[in-house]
Image 1 (tube, rainbow, N blue to C red):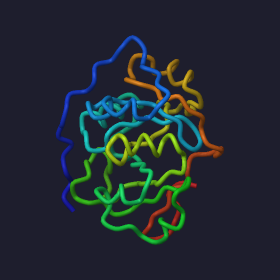
Image 2: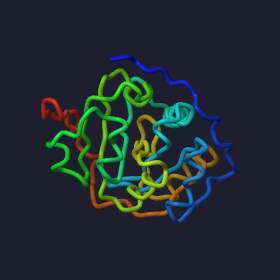
Image 3: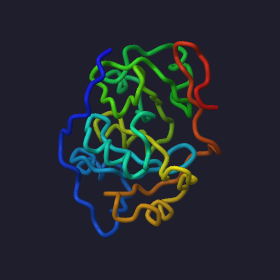
Image 4: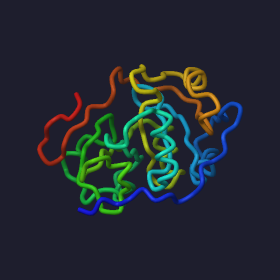
Length: 199
């Protein structure tokens, strides 16, 4: 499978003294489409997200987290159909667990950015049952990057205030919301083997 380069699509959204704090997912639509990086509540913590098709935004997010691009990122959607641009098929093992806090590694389509896949020919995806996160993914174009709001070695942020304290002006917006009932990050399984990549 061809390793697609992360060629920039748009310039990143300019930063502000503090990130915008918004109550409604739809209010972040323009920010995401301009290449912004936002924070939002998911199942167990606050996450950082951006447009998975925008290489400039993904690279910026990776720098904020201090996360190596080789590890790859999770693509989150509110419906399984919205993952079709990213994965080669929708395996039944994954569909049986969605929507819900279950992430699956599925063979990726060639056009998926290398900085999203990491050093893999597959991509981690999830259809979430978290209402605000699902809506944000939909208004942002169908799917959004989902990675915990923390820098390497830190605990993930669990409130919007914690996110603002840690990242400040480096983010474009923070979506108000409450995290779900999960106490640990979502388990990750390989759709081809059924084995856990992360418990």
